Image 1 (tube, rainbow, N blue to C red):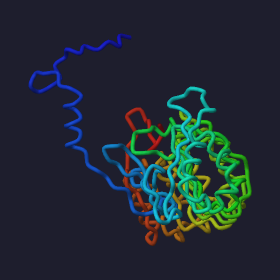
Image 2: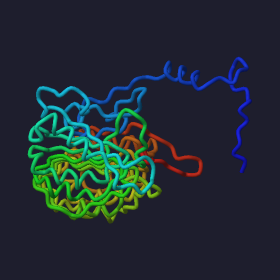
Image 3: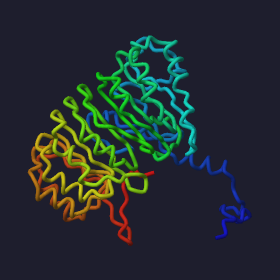
Length: 361
């Protein structure tokens, strides 16, 4: 195949070839700054575009765990416990095997010179890789005595594909911080988790274009007596999302999740099978919010939901980004008059039948 390009081609209206500067100017004029939704994604289910602010720098979060995110280069606030500190665990760009390279140790030392570690309540670890973060943070557990919220794979105001973010085993973080209340993870390349018992975790979120089935099973095999919000972006097999509906059995049984109020099984390419499993799942009866959005849910999956256990006790049913037909959309709405049902982003399959999830790469 010929990959060459004729750079003399006339692409512009006036007969000139134009320039990247011209493109940037046009882009800047047309770009619409989009603020993030003020609601916390650990309190309800939001689409990715609502969680992340979009501006000329790209998509990024300005808040985490209800706190404004602050870089260690910024002025130290009067209350260090009232911000989420942004630190870097950069293991290199791309896919080279450079897991021993990290800036996190240096970043943490710098942070601890500026503020008392015992005043730090939230950390957002950024970088294309967060491979070493769990072990490095575990080593500082005796100093970070008030740490309650951690985000691994946080993205700064620039464009980072979710599939670029690399991880390792996140279990040591949960083991070292038994009072941790919130853990969010973005990206899934290399991500591992072993079953754990954690008494205080209230929010567990995985933003992924392909969540490994082993991680899904580990969550289901764990015990989280305080967990109220569980959110898994299942993703697609091309990016490592190899879980099946059977892998959700531990979660759907609810055995290790006695306090669960909000369950999100989202962004999957097998959403009809997931919906069928949810339709008879014991955990559903005690939920307040259920999300099966961002994925490839079709009429078949929606039919399974309507034919299964009652859903009228739910406060919210989030099916945003789906492939339901018009008749099924009406049926779902009519079947749940007292439930806030989000059926926005109704899509049609491609001509070849292909359907797409909201977030993959």
